[in-house]
Length: 342
Image (tube, rainbow, N blue to C red; front, side, top):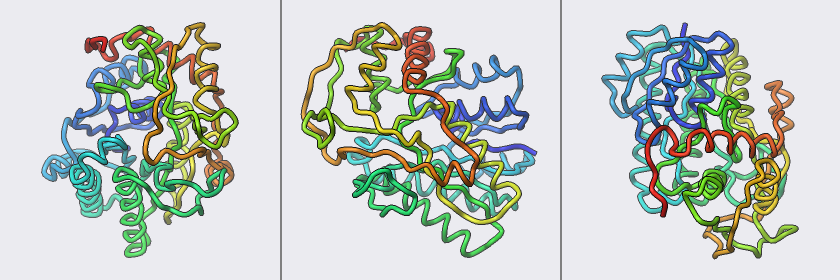
């Protein structure tokens, strides 16, 4: 029996594939490589010495998806595949709705056809929108503020309706906070296309000399130092959360949502300082305008994940920063693709 990992060549997907193989699962990966690299999968094999099947295909390609289920004995699905840039989703919302939601519908229809009713879904803390209170619990209001977040919430609602219609399904909705870091080997990590959307890849590019300085969006937030506070979680801790969710859903039925974070909030300036301490690299920065929709502070209440999944993030902020830098230092051009300074 195999675990199908959609989007398995991506940042979080690749780290999860590595952890799955390390503990003895067989995996099958499907990825269209639109925002990921084949090299990531080669390095997973290099690190684990375990082979796995890979299909380069889109979830919108129903024929290939059927082929995946016909050719493999799939036990459960971990569903990462989807577009994930908040800013881009505002610019091209129809593309995000079509890709993320229709892709998931095709996946669920195919799973149902082949009697596979176990899923771990990659959701996001974006579903909470601007939280009224922190820490954010799973029962907090769900009010996403951008198309990307709305696709995640709509998929959560689709999966909930699916379970209501057929109680044989077992689904875990994992709401991530801010994944950063990289595998301790320095062989797999986050390799964004073009300008990074996330803070740490941007800091990495400043540290390695691809960019001159970091732009910090806003210094007038209602926080202790005026910069936004977020819950940063090491990607390996996050990957292990998926394994715990998988262990829970395989023998049971039901649907439930879980926050995956550390439960601690750090400001942008604290993150920069921690990065400098961990790496001995100076990160020049300038303040610029706030981005629309950015919240003052957001960090997770992780009581439910601790209790029901038996999971807890173990790595420190300094671990996250150092592992991010190790990845960047070892892979100055990411997965072998040359990046020009701009």
